[in-house]
Image (cartoon, rainbow, N blue to C red; front, top):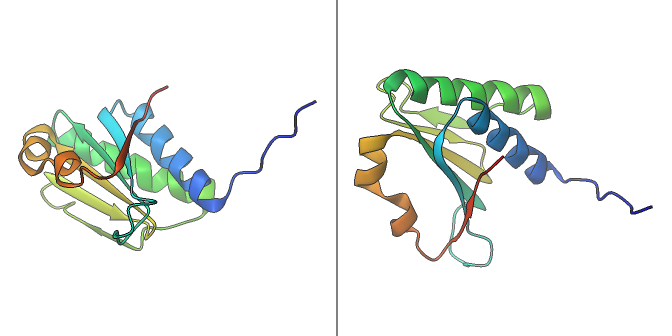
Length: 123
């Protein structure tokens, strides 16, 4: 019988974030993994967008709720909730960026951080 590897705190955090985004039907959720790039302030960005302000707010709320429920962690910092065009939820090692679609295209973080490994979040 194979031994199941115990997940570390960062893996549990990433699982909770990914599950929250999938639950609320986030559009094009991806992880930008910065490990190995040698010049990042965190280990990963998680990027997704919603089709409306309401969906962007729901995505952010679900991420915060699910992370708290599954890991006990609260965000270290959050911003952008007022207008919900670009919501940033900072868990120090992992930073979640939730956009409305036009803002995501405009800022294009995936291209800006092109040296990161990109992983799609899928069911």
